[in-house]
Length: 411
Image (cartoon, rainbow, N blue to C red; front, side, top):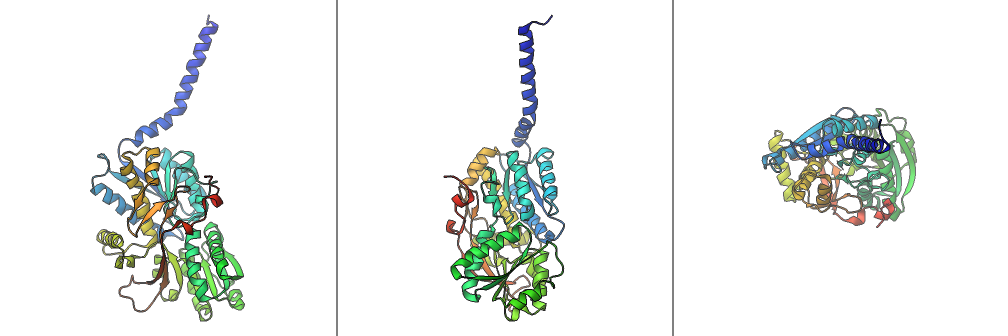
C-alpha cells in the first residue's frame, strides 16, 4: 500500500519529469545552437511579383556567407544559408519560418522582402526567441506592439524613404499630389510617409487611389488621375506592379504635365521597365554607382562582380548581404551564437559594410543609414547598368526616424 508521503513523492517526481519534457525542445535548440554550422534561415518570395528582387537578395546573402566562411568562420564553425519561398503569403511565411526554427534548427533568421509577410516572420521568431533581421520596408515592425528584443530591421522603413523623397520632390515639383498605391502595408505606409513629409511644403492631396498587388491593368485609374492635373503622382508600389504602372502611365501621357515619383525606385524594375522610367524620381537604400565616392561600395561591388560574372548588386540584393553580414558580425563580436549575447553585440554594432556608416537605434533596432535620391535615365548611360543619376543623399540621422515615444517604446 502506498503511503501519503510516497504519493507526494511520486507527484513531485511526475511534475519534475513533466517540466523536463516541456524544457527538452528548448534545451535541444540551445545545444544545437552551440555546435555544427551556424544556420541562417532566409524566407523570401522567390516566386510571384517580387521574384526578381528576392533572387537578387539570395545571391547577395550567399556572398556574405561565402566571405564569412573564407575568413575562417567562427570558432571553427562555418555558416550556411537555408532559403525558403514565402510566396508573398503571411500564412506561408509563418509556416516556413516555424519549420526553419523547429525542424532545421536555425540559429538566426534574415529575410522577408515584402511588408505583407515580414510581421508574420517576426511574430514566429519573437515568440520563440530567435533573432530576426528584416530586410523588408516596414514601419510597423519598429512599433512596440510588434517589436521584440530579438527583432532587428536592416532595411530602410517607409517613413525614412518616402520622407527623404518627399522632402526633395515637393519643393521642386509642386503641391498638387496624387497617390496610386498598392493596397497593403507597403503602399499605405509609403503614402503616410509622403504626406507627413509634404506637410512642410503644404501639399494638397487630390487623389488617393488603391490597387491590389499584382495588378496588370491601370487603365481604370489613369484617366481619373490625369483629369485632376496633379503636379506629382506618387506610385507607392513595388516590383512588377511598379514596372507595369510606370509603363502605362508613360504610355497614357501623364509625364507631359505630371512628375512621376516612386518612394523606392528599384534597380530591377528600371532594368525591366526600360525607357518608360526615364525621368522618374525615387529613393533607394543602395545604387552601385556609390562606388564612385564610397570605398566600401567599390569593394562590395567588386566582390559581387567576381562572384556573379560581372553583374552589379541591386538595392534589395545589397540588403540581403547586409542583413546576413550584420548577424554574422554580431556573432563574432559576441564571441558566441547565444541569442542574448548576439543581440547585445548587434545593438552596439557600428558598421560600414557596403554604403557608408550604419548602426541600430537602441529603442527599436532600426538601422540608421543614408537614403539616396535617384532619377532614372535612358540616355548618357556608360553601361547597361548605369540606369540612375544620384541627385542627392540624406545622411544617416535619427532625426529622420519616427520618435521612440511615437512608436510606443518607453524610456
